[in-house]
Amino acid sequence: MRKLNPNLPRKRVVREPSCACCPGCGGALRAMGEDSDEMLDLVAQAWQLIETVRPKYSCRTCEKIIQAPAPAKAIARGKLSYAALAHIMMAKWGYICPTIAKPR
View 1 (spheres, rainbow, N blue to C red):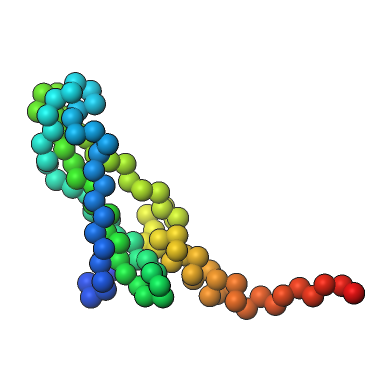
View 2: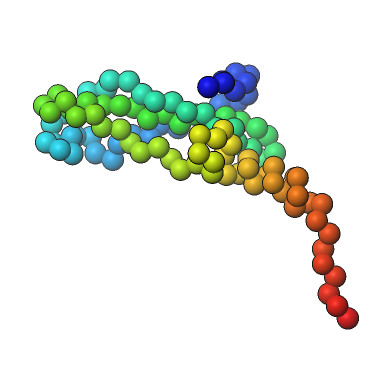
């Protein structure tokens, strides 16, 4: 997948699992990598990238892999946040629609 512009300001968000131990057996977890995803966002009329990181952990006892769920996206596998998508839609259609005059 194509990477977004590396010169844009970035905000890193780390989503940890809800429990610090294995939900299956209660064993200790160890870090084993992470998944990363980028979304283009519009914040106060300035573009920035929000990188969501979800570390992966494995249980030393039962070898189960634990990871926080991915956040919901406006468009599946899309690169736009809800705010960026709303801004584009309003710029394209919302600001040019004439107001409907009330009948007299």
